[in-house]
Image 1 (cartoon, rainbow, N blue to C red):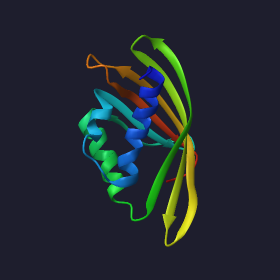
Image 2: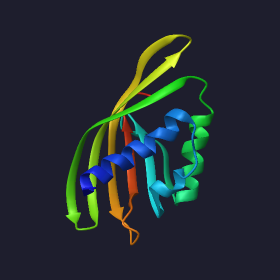
Image 3: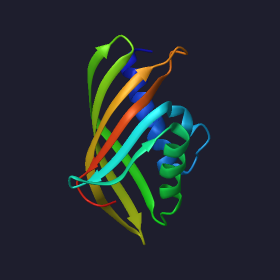
Image 4: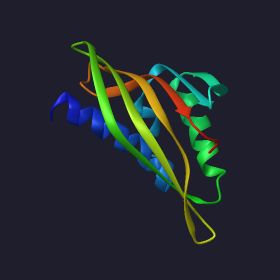
Length: 136
């Protein structure tokens, strides 16, 4: 598997629990010292969240509190290599929501990330800024 394929898979694996509630292994998508923040229309609303346990707990808690059905569509992945084991990756988020039988686009935004490859050859998020255009 190429590095690009592995990073695309990382984004897909990260979004899967947010959409399905299957949380086993969610923490493993982040480095021990990960730093995550969320902004809406340029205003920071969450974070910085520091460390994989806090990030996983906070993101899963927010998703579990939602009563609608959400689908995170992540597209237009762009990679900028920093070195052999580190990449700056940006991607577009389109958040689809089904609530009371209606499908709506709830928000869109950008993932601005730093992804590193560990000694075990797995790629993980080291930094993630989720820059939403509208509230989610």
